[in-house]
Amino acid sequence: MSELNKIALKIISNGKGILAADESNGTMSKRLEAVNVTSTPENRLLFRETLFSSESMKECIGGVILYDETINQMTSSGKSIPDLISISGALPGIKVDTGAKELANSSEEKITEGLDGLRDRLKKYYELGARFTKWRGVYLISEKYPSKLAISSNAHALARYSALVQESGMVPIVEPEVLMDGDHSADACFSKTSEVIKKCFEELTLHKIDLSGIILKPNMIINGKNSKNKISNEEISQKTIECLKNSVPTEVPGVAFLSGGQSELEATENLNLINKNNNTNFIMTYSYGRALQQSALKMWSKNIKDIEATQKTFNHRAKMCTLAAQGKWASELENE
Ligand code: 5MM
Image (cartoon, rainbow, N blue to C red; front, side, top):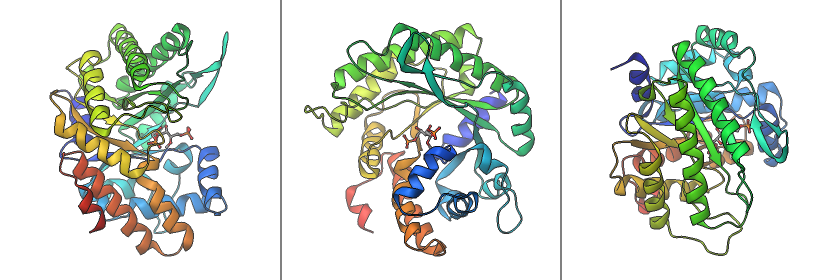
């Protein structure tokens, strides 16, 4: 078993999942302003520190993805954020892409940037305590998108990123996110996601990536959010499993889904069904941002000093997601 494989398994085994708290300052400001909290470095730290010191970090969270600002911050008790996370047994991770920018010659699509100088930034993050990283490619679905150009250039970037991350002794999370935006069908999501993921693995293989030392972070197979033809949770789970079975090499230890705009309940129920129906060798867990933090953020915004109420809300959500990652969730448990 390679060291990288051990790290990957430590993050995602036994129902543990990933807390994606890597919102860039722009995105975090939108989230805070939506609940009438001013977005300052202190407030961003306070919310995140509240989550990272919750009880559920121990049983539920295997890794936390941080943003550059957060990994460099000190907690109120004088610990570094990576130390706070490590105390609970979780691993600190870091988003290393520098964002999705307009793709030249296909201006409605995006290419994720951040490869220049990445080797040196990775050294710094390793010294700060990071043991895994994240890079997200985003793809739009419409009649003509994602284009071959977007599929191939983002896969190439994800593979070059992964090679540098593994060289630095960390596990890359490979996140190709096919967006839920639009009115496309679940079948379109299935075929485009399959094409995107297959191309990613073609490039990862070309770049000699140790596939046992990565975590794939894909979207589930769902109809577009404006589509009139909504498919059932059961169909979502079956199509998602089928897509991954056909496009992900068996050496990959696990898949940690993004929530992508699903509600907390939808993301939990779908993950639960995926695990109930899972007939692959992949661990299937969560790497949720919004679907883990939404209720906690709302609660926190009522009184940012009421740490206990915020942690209670977060603990409940993390517990539900961890049950779903083992196929043991049931809707009645939401009311306990
Ligand atoms: C936490 O949000 C991340 C986005 O950050 P920026 O857009 O600010 O760079 C995002 O990559 C996230 O990690 C994944 O999309 C999963 O989050 P959701 O909310 O989709 O589960």
